[in-house]
Amino acid sequence: MTADELPIGRRVARWRVRRQLTQQMLADRLRRSKSWVDKVERGVRPLDRYSVIQELAQVLRIDPELLLGRQRPVTVGTLDGVDDLRAALARYDTRPAPAGEAEQLRRLVGHAWLSYQHAHYPQLVRVLPGLLDAAQGTQTSELLVQAYRITSSLLVKLGEADLGWLAADRAMAATGGDPVLSATAAVSVGQALRALGRGRLALAATLAAAEHLEVDRRRPPGEWAVGGTLLLQAALAAAGCGDTCRAEELTERAAGIAGRLRGYDDAHRTGFGPVTVELARVVAAAEWGDAGAAVRRHPAVVRRAGWRLLPAECRGAYLLDVARAYLQLGDVRGAARSLVDADSIAPAEVRCRPSARTVIAEVARAHPAPAGVARLATLVGLTR
Image 1 (tube, rainbow, N blue to C red):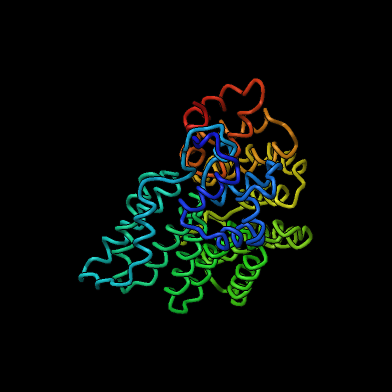
Image 2: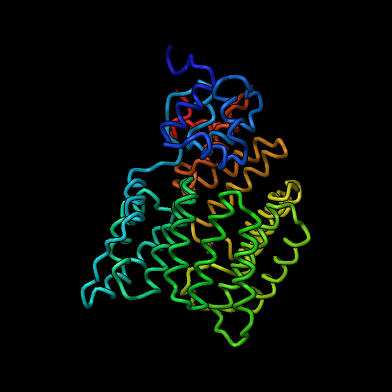
């Protein structure tokens, strides 16, 4: 029997084994019971809802069409080098960095941040294992925290949220109790927990860190920006939990901070400002289920003067969220426009992320498929 002829439950079991997951591990990531997974794999429980198939595919890091037997095997969101990153995070036998190496490491960390902000993910995934090895031997907490933060952000992008959470946790452990470094690490913790579907934990972690920073109002603007970023992360976590009032309150607090910032040195790589607050309003609305409000706000956001000054990664990720909002409304053409715009700004954001491939697959099923998205589907291997 060929792979295409297998029942869908057998395909789930085959990909689960390939991903080195037990039935219990898969059940935990889906927030379902082990019995449910066992019944699916044995064909006792039918998989007849596409949303459930999408959820399974995201956890297994494959395209949903592959579970349906309609597509050749293409691993979703995996780039050469992710296994090397996993190995780097598993190493504890670090060597002390030679004297004078800190300045070179600082330059490498700065270059890695730029690669991330420009969405150069294929290059970054190759560089980070070596950077982590070098950073783990340094005595400079700031550089080690930044290296772990970049690693966490990239892994979350690539659908490896569990590894992203590990890197974020390592960042937190490396802060040495420094309140500002702890706050920057908490941003990564919140992102990873949200990607894992742990919205309440993300809300608690980011809000606690933000309020800790707010105790001292004499902090410099760059540190206030960290606090504002934490408030936005907390707002998105609250929105994902359906707590609309809390999300709006937190966003307003972040907007108050953004309104007081003027031309600060973004040493902590937050990118925080008035425009990012408006982006968060759109994404939060989509998160709590008001896609109509999200797409109504969207045109005004991209017309703002600061939109084009945002990093390519930020704009590409935002446009993917907008594409999902359009899909919630059944507006395939709106979703297609957002996808094509995101690809023109940050190609790797669209072509390397599992969540983006799922959106492309949904839009590409339209008859006829929008031309730009049909091309994207071919580029990422979703068509024969």
